[in-house]
Length: 318
Image (tube, rainbow, N blue to C red; front, side):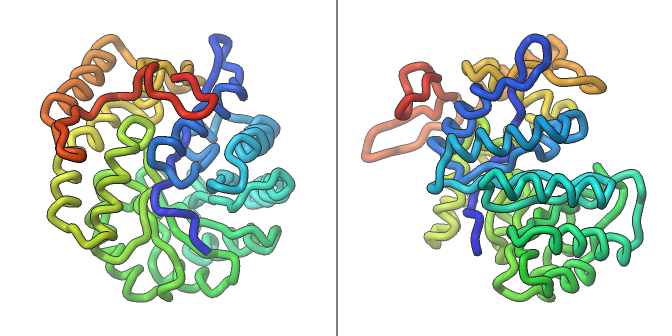
């Protein structure tokens, strides 16, 4: 089982009333798969999972999967700090045709390692869909340890981990202990290349919203054995990887998507929209990336641009 190398943790588009814009969600999912993504994660942290209702999530899972069909992966974010609620949503998600599930370490509760094990085990047993674990201690205040992941990897449909603890030592322990069939994904864009070097499978990305093609070039270069080119891509992209977190995710990336013609809309409270200073920072960040990033394609110099109206795919208007 593989979910692909680049999965985008997709923002949830909203209208001016902060209601879910399902049509724009379909358009965004198609746009991302045209620009480097093998699939999307719907209603993860970047999709504002804490403030999107269960019924809204189920509808998003359904419409995004319908939009992408069988060619691309759709992973449904069903995790919360309630095991029972996560199980219920997992079962509902399984009826929408999604390819897999993602469940975050329970936040706020601060469960023990045994509590985490039992939580994920119960979710996995609720549906045969493949399950990706998500470890992000900076958000949850609890760290899913490698020993617990190893135990969980013995459950047949727990097949992957999105690892965002920020520790290459922890990643090394994971890769040392886990079976080779168990896939570990970077949960931080800036850790993608270092984690690929440790044998990980890919990235669940935020930055791929705006530099998806470039990220694909980096990841493909690595798997093609061109480590020097992969390193160059990493260094070119690094300021973007870090800069798009100038304030709480997904505030900056939604602002950037609005700039390029994707109607991502605003964010629900307690998040608030980007300030004018943050908007200016993001504009400058992307302009600087475009200025410094000039590379050769088929002998022609090409400047890496944010996608514009002239660049379309099938029925997508950007």
